[in-house]
Structure formats: structure tokens, C-alpha cells
Length: 294
Image (cartoon, rainbow, N blue to C red; front, top):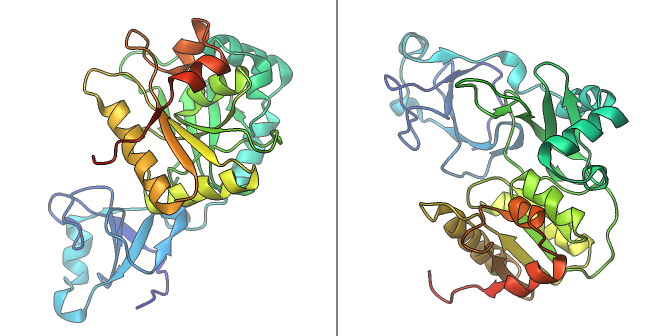
């Protein structure tokens, strides 16, 4: 059943977990208790702006409005109405040539690499603003990378209501080049700096919707080879994420060649690898076939 997209949602809590997936956070419920917005379990009613799916709650399973309001926390009504494209235009106006130079120096990368992407800048606190994109001109979220985090403050911050979609390049690339799908934006900038065609996912395996965005982009730039780059970390999660994402892309794009690439074991990620002298040829030579079973 399609929802009427009620504006007033409340965030699930331990006292009122999501009625669809059972989690105590990340998901929401309408104030009337008749719709759940679940960020884990899919339905036929996708809600792009909040990176989740709407589920109708039958009358027999609903909790009273008083119970919903008592045990959940309010969410701003503006969540559904946020215009991330307009917000991003504000941040891009702050991305002056001098700011771009300072950001590139802070990342240890070239200014030219950053210029290939539609990036913004938040003046306070100093942060690179990176668009999450569901298509070439469709921004569905903004993620801030603080350049000088202090104390326990996280380096990363998302605008409220953002969806974790990929970062796509704004400038054309030579058709037919292999497409490198990196784990995070700084690796994407590094790959671009050495002449590779690159876009970025976030640091978790892709789901179907985000994978399709990347496949659409690969089709537009005529890439018949996709290489999913992973990180080296103690848990092995970076390599696992790359393999799982690669397998999903292969499933959805069976005619493409899909590989993975992990930096040498003493190097954390693609950005560090580039900073230590990696070339496009070296990265491509390190790429390997996906496992047949995983």
C-alpha cells in the first residue's frame, strides 16, 4: 500500500523499536503509528530523501498515538522538505580557489583532482562538503569532512536527512576507461589525481539502489570494467565491503568485468598508496577477479 507520506515522523528508540526490523535507532514511525519508515527492510514505497522505505502498519498492529509520542523522539518536519541541491549551492559559493588549495593541501592531493567534483565548503567548522548523488544532477544528501577535528569530535558529519549515495564526477572522462569505485571520497580524489576514472561509495557494502546509480554512471561513461577498491584494516572489513559490493554490481551488470583492488598490505588505503607513488598502471595491475563464492 502506498503511503501519503505523512510529514510528522518520530524517531524510534529502545522503548519503541522499529516495528518492521526491530532496531532501536535509525528508523522512524509516523505520529499516528500507521506508517513506519524503515532504513533496513525494503518495500515498494522507496523514500529517497530519508534513505529508507515506507511500510504501512495495519490497524491491528498499531500502537496508540499517546504511546508513540511518549516513547519516541521528535523529528523536524523539514526533513522531507530539505532541498539538498539548494543547500549545496550555498556551500559551493564558499569554495574559492584559495579554499580549494588549502583543502587539497590538507588532504595531500592535487587541486586539479578536487576540481573534477562538485564540492562545497562549510566555513565553520572548516569542512569539505561532499554531495551524495542519486544521479548526475540529483543531490540527496550532504556529508561534511571536518578538516581539523578536535578532541572527541568526529571527522564526519551528515546534514540531517541525508542519504548515503555515491559521489560522482562532474567533468567528462575519456569513454571506455575502467571505472574505479573507491571507499570514500578522498580515495576517489586520489584515483582521479593519477588519471583514473573514479567515483566513490561510502564505507559499507552497496545496496541495490546505490549500486544501480553506479551502474548507470558506468554506462554513461562507457565503462565495461568496474574495479571496486577497498581499504586495508585490521578487521578485514574494507576488503569484505569491496568484494560484497563487487559481487552485487556483477549480479546487476552481468556483461561487465568486475574486479576488486586492495592496496599492498603495508598501506592503509588508495590515497596513501597514491601519496607513496602509485600510478594508474600499478593500481590496475593489482586488481583481481572476484571470488566465485563468498
